[in-house]
Picture (cartoon, one colour):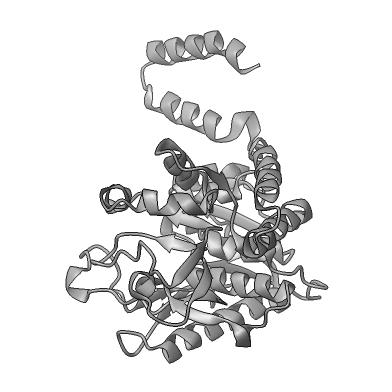
Length: 362
């Protein structure tokens, strides 16, 4: 049986595309970053790209090629009348970095079509985020937090002497909070949005998409001294390569973002006054090595349960780290509520209740 990795041709039904979304001719380099990270892992165990089969994510259900083992590191959702699960009988799925979207009734469809039962023989399921892990556990599937393989790209050998600050796909409200002296000295030429001239996308087009992602990775590696972004698959490859990252978003409650918790701060645009705009690179060698060890164990079938347990232990320790003053997200939610209490009496009552709760957080 051959090994395979996912590619992206986005074979969506254009007539079913929600009006508030980008049309499916729009690509996201974050998808490619995940697939290139899988390619990198295969290379570490001596399986070159030339020996890998390519399976389009949106064709997983109807794949009819050579039998293969496929790493399921990807976003899986119910979008534009395409739901790529379950997998074809010719695919042996290896669940690492699996994300099951909670949007567009994806999880309801997952349950309705009985996919959970088809998944059980492949337990434990390695999930990219804790939301997916917790959902699977809630329906009786053994699952663990495997993190994302984009954290396993090799660390660059040296930083550029005159590096650039890249601002990449920062949402509007967060962009407004970036200090002017940074904006004036930044490069905004990189985006993870990608456009095709033709649709649906051919395999040749999908590989050109990936080659563009390789070029972007090389630019980060060779040119960046700092990256500011609202996108996790901009942040994680740069963290892996040893590049300082500021992650700031207008929606810090996105369930996908917890893959960054304990690694770097997750700033809301409301935290602008607290943001460290000149961070150091973060050291993630223990986490990176655990993700690599687990991926290799799952691919080879050796000590898979042991490596999964070790990885989740390290990830849970990281999740306990809180970079923001006074309790990070928890404190932010309280202060936001406090700001809504306009009347003085309400504010005093609010503070008295917090003081009473204090004993529970010692």
